Length: 313
Ligand code: GLN
Image (cartoon, rainbow, N blue to C red; front, side, top):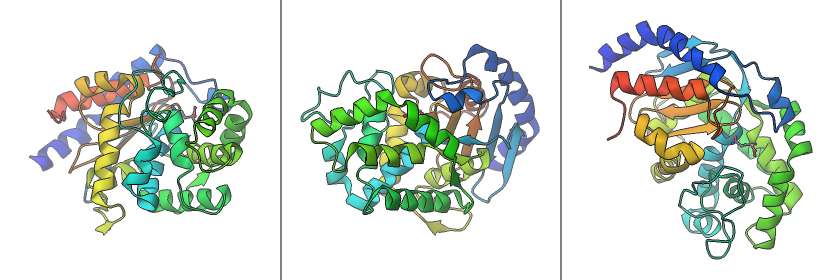
């Protein structure tokens, strides 16, 4: 059956991409980070990778973009590997918020003022402060090294223009960080933790990198192509659970209903997703819907899920 569906996938993917491409006009490229506003609005690309390393790509699959919120999944994993579950969950909760990803509304609600989950901005900022390293520079070096390992791509770098642009305009993230500092959630200084956070959001990749990173999660922490364990199984289980409940921001319920697989989106219009036990998937299309998810990307994943009955339920 797997071989059959792979054949079907390779022969139809371009046609499904062309069909979903129409939806690029339903959204708007993110502009609150000025550098992201330069992204073209007519791009849609996808890469799907199987456990043997076979890949199928379609559309603008060479397009390069920054990870943005997708990076939060892997910094969460690093924090778990560096500090363990008990410390991580003393700094962030386990529940979706139902609010926008950069909201401050619920920061006071969970005792003692910790963010609801590690995938909203406030939670991811708290997680950034947990990454091991003597200063932000060392944290960022470790993050890059880990992301390169998971993507199996030693050329991954930070896009400095995006980093600078976000750094210069991040008034809201700064407020969130000061709030967390006041609540005693941050170990490090606000400027240092934000430097680490903006850096990992600005790591540049393409769809193939995303698919490879997703493949490792799909195979519970083992890179099946090299047959090498990169992440303990339990931490991948935690990451995938958060992707399912909070990965598409406050549209995670709708995505779970219509697509039914773990996914994480970023404001660059990227989505990392997977079919557990099988494929890693990387999608990008910059125009976003009201909730901040790629319109064409979500449509394409919905179509694929329908065709291949990917929903976990
Ligand atoms: N760097 C972005 C921010 O903090 C990430 C947000 C996102 O992708 N949703 O606003």
